Length: 182
Image 1 (cartoon, rainbow, N blue to C red):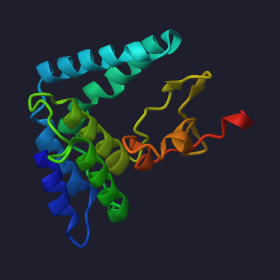
Image 2: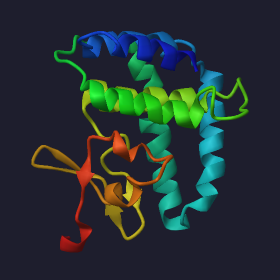
Image 3: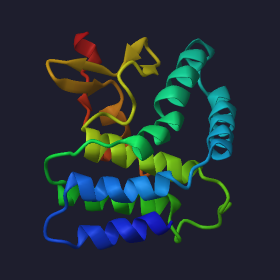
């Protein structure tokens, strides 16, 4: 993905501001059309068959609204963000997505914009907004949810997913929710 090349080039600067990252994300968000969003929604609905039925409807509604259509928020974001990006985490995130969707990830459909949407939203929520990738209220089996408590985001699956090579949990700002104490 060309976006990774631009992010890598940016990461080589001595300091990387949130606004610099947002500018790149905006450029790529402009390449996502309504048709691309509809295809991404369809793909998400197809994958939803693997989720327990009781969570599927909540999951689908939340993710389509807070994930797929959030690309529009990136493109229209006119805020000026103060602060610098944690370059170590930023480079780790770039590496993770390059591994998953970059030129070395094997063959994939160049017209499939889902990987780009996924990367855009992950970078936007993590590095620009400082929010978890899975939005507050995201349901997980066991009647557990991503929550915000005392200004911290807590996720019930963070620790369980951090060793998965494809999980974006490593870059997510959420901390692990110790659901045994709940």
